[in-house]
Image (cartoon, rainbow, N blue to C red; front, top):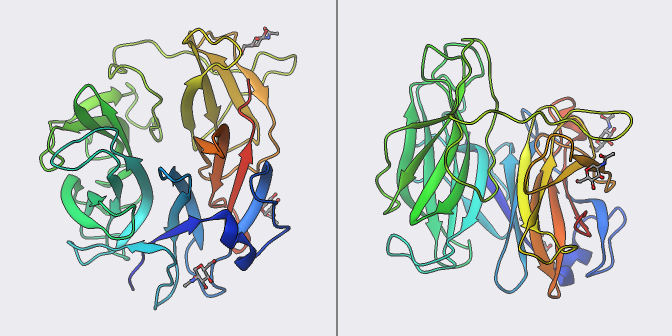
Length: 339
Ligand SMILES: *[C@@H]1O[C@H](CO)[C@@H](O)[C@H](O)[C@H]1NC(C)=O
Ligand SMILES: *[C@@H]1O[C@H](CO)[C@@H](O)[C@H](O)[C@H]1NC(C)=O
Ligand SMILES: *[C@@H]1O[C@H](CO)[C@@H](O)[C@H](O)[C@H]1NC(C)=O
């Protein structure tokens, strides 16, 4: 069986051709728009883990874990394993090069994801691919990391998960979740590259002292690269009935349109709630307010600031949850940026 990352390019003009429930008007705000359902005979979670990217012409790409039987369906393009004979299986991530890098022009699209056999045994790579034609076709660049597997969340299995790419001070950084150190059930680490081909030694980001603790998965909003040495800040909503986020985190940063002073807003999403948490640059422990945009939660709901006819909006991409695969599908939402 070959599993693929589905890549769909959404043009408002063709939304009428896909399943609507109901179809949002082009260029309006909406939530919970299911635009793609998995095949009835899809396996495992059917769909999960959606990630989006905007191209310079404002069209949107979305990718997710897709679990079809053969032959795999795809739409705009397909990112297939070109190296390992295993399939690109888990946690795709898309990123646009902000400047010329490693011989590729600004605007080239990078994709990283987990490649491992369907059996989940025999090894696992986080692999990096590049596209120079707006994600239409893909070329293998490098293995970012290798684990002996099997690719399970069991304490002691040499698994690696959830790559997240970021350009920072002349380097591309790949953050990921790492189970290869027997002293820690799981830790979060990153590696860097200056040429997209060779990668630095591992740098720890979150390493808990208790062997069985599992910090989860990394997403990063623009910030320095030092995490392991700083104290964590509790994340609790500051309203009269405080709540805390749990699992499937996603974080972004955007300029604060209320202040116009160069400062920003940090927006966080978690798997257990619909609300997003909004805080200011100081990440003050008392400054996390919650905003319910009405978008379903998901494992894991991703967020991205996009422009729709030039106006900045918050885009959500959902691939469903782990609870009930029969209820999983791919949904998106576009809302005003919560401030
Ligand atoms: C891809 O999307 C187009 C437009 O929505 C649709 O007509 C076509 O059937 C889709 N193809 C596949 C293989 O899903
Ligand atoms: C909660 O945090 C927000 C900043 O995100 C702030 O504007 C608001 O005043 C805070 N509310 C309380 C009750 O502290
Ligand atoms: C199906 O998924 C939607 C969206 O996440 C959710 O609101 C609903 O409760 C789910 N239904 C079941 C039966 O799990």
